[in-house]
Image (cartoon, rainbow, N blue to C red; front, top):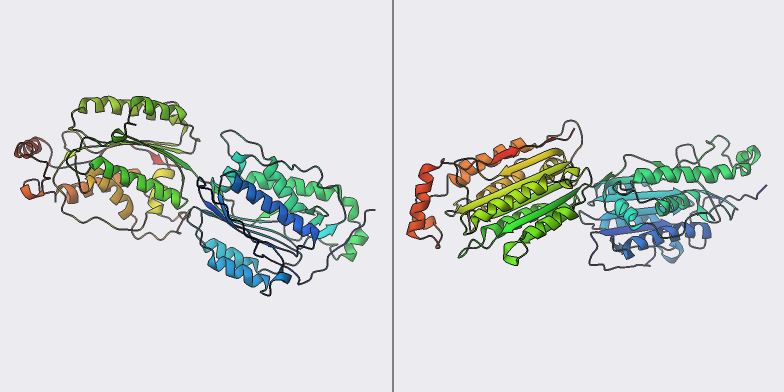
Amino acid sequence: MRAFRQFHLFPLITLLLSSTMVFTLPTAAQTIHALLIGSDTNIPEYAKNMDRVVKLLRTVATQDICTLEEVRVGSVMDNSTPASEQTKDWLENVRPGGNDVVFVYYSAVDDFLNQEEVVSKLDKMTGRLKIFITDTDFHIIEITENGSGFINTDPSESVLESLFVEHKGFLNLTSKSESEFAFGDANGGWFTQALIHAIYAAPTNGDNPVTWKDILKTTQAVTQESYSKNSDVFSDELRASMNIANIKKSQTPTVLGDFPTLTLTVHALLVINDIADAGNRSIATINHTRIRGLFREAETLGICNLHIQTLRSSENSLTRDNITAWAEALQPDNNDTICIYYSANETEPNAEDQGDLIKQLEKVIEGENAKKSRLRMLIIDTYRLGPVVQIPRFGLPYPQTSFYNLFLEHEGFLYLVSKSENELSFGDGSDGGWFTRALIESIYEIRRREDFPSQVPDNGERRTFLEWDELVEKTGNKLKEELFKHAGFKDVENYPVAFSDEEREKLLEDLETAQKSQTPQARELPQKTQ
């Protein structure tokens, strides 16, 4: 029978030393803030655990997937501060961004950390994805061949992107279930070996990203295989001497709590005809800044992944060929969102061409590639130059839940235009298109008093939900009661300098024959995802 030895629990447990690695990768989407807590480096089996995890994180960084800000490994014997105090200090002082990853790995002979406290601190921390992995208190078996068949090649880049970039939430993963012990051999902990193996061996599944649930399934199978292969070691006599006679004859890695979920992706095309507003600050440019900011902030906060492209006439990129190229390159997942936004002055000299351009955008959003997505959106803000609006701009915190509801929890088709039939739509060089302004402000204002978590909306049954029909109504009311009503069409001093007397008279004449309002028209409305 193979020899067996067990480490008795002892306090020489560790954490961190100042082995700090900083990778500066300008293309990285976010940063992994990593804390590695381990047993003394003179215990080879535990050191191998740490080596595996460090190698994984370095691979993520060197493949330009994430920036790895910090990894700390070492021994408590090299630092007079207790490991638990060092951990507490790190957790209280790390400052992740909303789209960052916080990664804590803990492998030790003695379970010296208050894990509930660590979980509590991570749960309250900013960050798109929090990961807490523990492989503690495992018993060492003198076996050298157990890990020899594990994959040692680098993992797939797409797998790492899925696990570290395309997920959000909290993963609390531990090496064993209740009433079980964790084991390891000369190659390290069976759980850590199996976990790294599962990530390295995970297949690229085309349009179906690898999830943490997939990784756990493989990890459990490999860990149990290690346990089963060495069943002859666990004789009743030996189990009794170890005081483990009554534990389950298995080792089952377990997720405590929910799994992280895949972060949805928004594919946005902003088509901006910004040459026509000569003599004034471009209304289309202001619209572009507002819409792009709405999407970019959602990406920064970790609400969604974002693939965004702008085509602007002022940069000579707004061409039919470029629109076609974008549509052909589109590869959405079936749970993604496609959004096309168009902004232009409807009175510009080539206004007739705009109709053809909008028809092309309609064909794109109805195309085969776009229809693979969960939600398709076409938003059109065509306007003419009007008086400066005499109402203050808004200033409110970013509407995370409203954005989440509207762009990530609807399905179908939204086709929204800036005005209804027999109406005029307007914009000015100070505030951009009135429709775009009213739409963005309504998204911000409608849930002003919401009390949701800072990152991910509360998924409970009682949470409020913002649907597109409610937002369209709110936007119309804002246009009618604020922007259109307070524009002062007859007050000459409110007109831009570029207005001639003839232009002002023509505008007033047009207003006489048009409806005295600007009402957004939803030609198609999506439904709340069931």
